[in-house]
Length: 229
Image 1 (cartoon, rainbow, N blue to C red):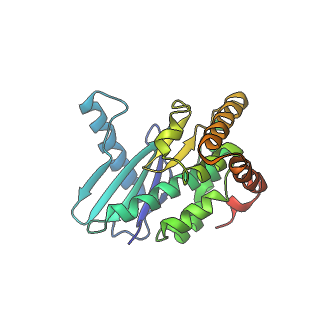
Image 2 (spheres, one colour):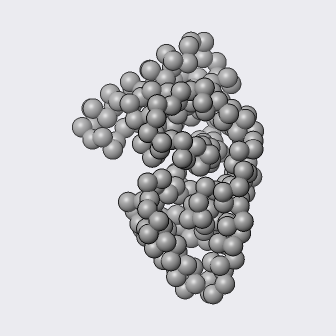
């Protein structure tokens, strides 16, 4: 039970990553991504709301999960009889890993070719059937920034909705638990949020807890751990 396919498309619907090796689809990946993009685009037009759209769709022997984050569309392909309760955390952690691994690359402003991100196949192969606790442990120790890594740990101490309230314009929920920091955040805002997170943690858990978490994060930030499968 897990993800059989994982697709990432930019805001215009162009695929930048596609792995459907474990699906029963018998058509060219370009046709798949074109169809999925068109369905989502049409659903938003029907609702007359750019922020709306399909979050889940079932087709005969397949469930399709849609998520939107950091101006990218993420699609997960799942067996129709699989439990979404078990599969959704896998997809959400993979989204966080993908954004973290390619954080600087995705916001470089250049056109992204699918071949440039093919290295993510190693992550997909390893984690598509993983348990949530193993995925959580991985992202806790593999973060592109101190703030992102600290949030990856603090979701074990606070409801993610409470943490997002600190800066809802910059902190976005990935599913029910994970949080992604907007990649365009400025250093001053990052420092402010870290300060508020420290204050919030000290009120509930006392002094020293936040510093301990942050110290562990700083050991791993900017290392090559994210580059390994």
